[in-house]
Length: 86
Image (cartoon, rainbow, N blue to C red; front, side, top):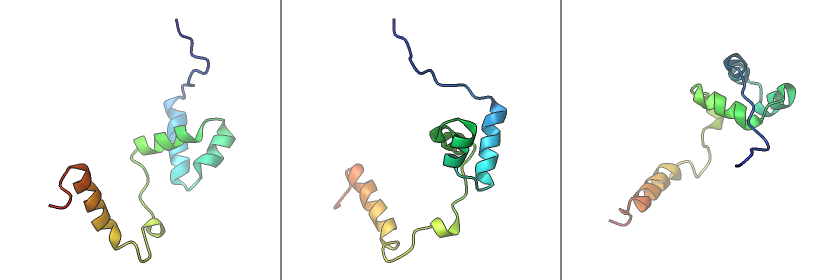
């Protein structure tokens, strides 16, 4: 018989929704975790399950390597699926 030493706490849906709204209002999950006593990973998961956040313009890739990203991702896809070099 196994015993779980640290069972995961169950948070009410209203609490989860409040955390999602606070993150959407530009509060950081790390700050909220400290303030409300839950784990940062839980808050991040709830935000992702709620549809996530739109990527801000400044978070888009910039610089000399941004042109390589589409080709690199195509290369990785082809490599994983066995089509590289064909």
